[in-house]
Length: 114
Length: 113
Image 1 (cartoon, rainbow over the protein chains, first blue to last red):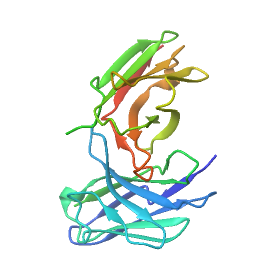
Image 2: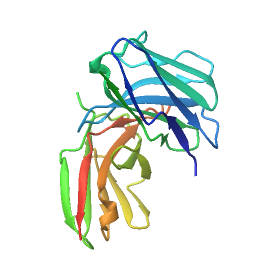
Image 3: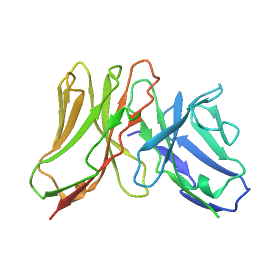
């Protein structure tokens, strides 16, 4: 079946640095990718919708200058957490879809900012 | 305001018995509903879905029921197996939302051997 690969699975960074997370659709072209964030014992919260070749659409309350999203091709979207702070520590998950399929998720990235 | 609610954070069931996970929604524009299963430190895995034109969809041990008038859906797993132990998320979308999903907060299912 469809596979979405997310890398890295775990990253620890120092406060003030930037971290890039990659999301790739391995065997299908994803016209749309989504980035979610999950806090412990809470739901997946949609951060932004990324369409190939156009600017991402951010959900209310998500800082677009802090969470930079680039969807340069039909198989790759990246999320860059800029100037990371400890409160950015979370589990970030990407998903991808085509028109015909339900969303397929990556395995997530555990970000810890020290 | 939570548009998709899973009011039971956890559920324990004996192996071989039925597991019933419930989900309520408030947005009448939702017309497509999905259940995802999630293990720790992994992304959610799609389990089963149902569109609003149906009231039941079955796939092996998994059946999803949709009651549109009550804005309620449920996932039945029978017979439950220890490998089913995971967090189950209910999600909903509307046809005009480019496949964006709104998730419930999840229910931790534990199937006891």
